[in-house]
Length: 253
Image (cartoon, rainbow, N blue to C red; front, side, top):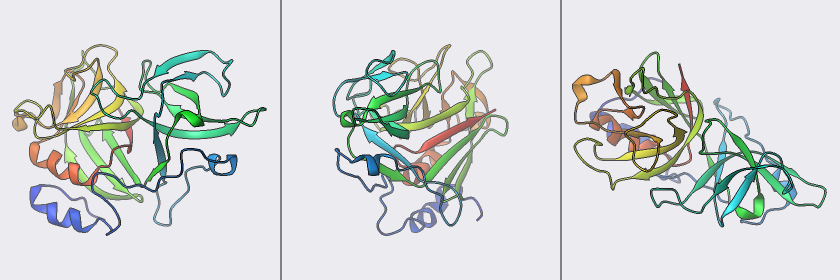
């Protein structure tokens, strides 16, 4: 399928959404307390390619451990809210049941070093939300590409970090959607990600990499930021209609 680009394609992009899907969120939550039979669900392949992913919100402050046990080394403290004041969500990667019958889930942690995975008790998380979208940021080609069910539905040129403030590569997820930073610099809407800059970033609230608009569209594509990913305002508006919170992100060099 050809990529959809530009503000004139907004109506077409919206038409691609199934009637049961929301542009901001696609969900099919399970109850907060799930049996081990449900907890061992893995991403399943789809007929048209791609995979489903799942995320859950943090219901109560909890520790993330190096392994699926409360006796394993604690590697992060997780709160119920992000630094921006939104619901803290975690991308769920795997699950297991310990000898006591307690369910533990492996999650992508929004901490440094990037790509850190930790284990948290299932009871500390809310119901699962399932997604069929995936966002790829290609630092070499300077493009952002969104897929649903393995099919490309959006592509746009981007700005990325300068060599001294690089955009980090790896696997992440869309952590929140924000309009409070609406301005000439950030554009009409911004997405926070779980990626963090180990050097410096112009993203508020302590080093998280953002995806947002810009008041300098003539600089795109290019290496222009402190690590954040910039799109032209017309493109971030279109992406906002297609990109659910919780979507996995792959940033490749």
